[in-house]
Image (tube, helix red, strand yellow):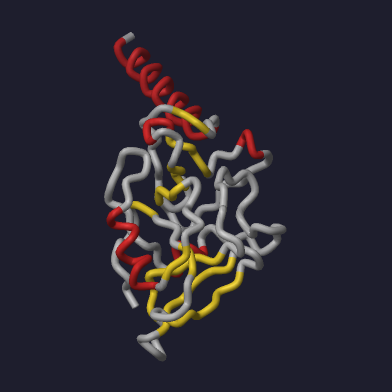
Length: 185
């Protein structure tokens, strides 16, 4: 009898943990249990049943958790454009959703949001973001290896990688929390 109770308890735990990952909500109070894994793909059949993105209500719905990568993004990045140096300083000063600790994302992190098959903006199906910048081009923290006066950026008009001059080009910043934090290149 004791063994049967123990087996039933394990089965309930297994079903409960499976159900919480399958039936994700697009807006919810935490905990969110992000399991970042850059090799997973969370399909979004419709915007209302997308398990990839969770609008974080505990951050005033101003931030979005990407469950594929574990990164937390601004839901509506500013349309303010500036040089790369100012953008790099802007993110750490940001207080979005009552939280600090934001930074400029790396090239790879920005690219994780690009959907080449989407129309303008080239973001994944079911995304909850509002891109105000026009055109929606955002600086990456990643410096171009061939020339340290230049840095990468992503154009969400076409989902393309571009290279800008850090001092003279004026692009927007889309701040992020979590992840690697430092430009590894």
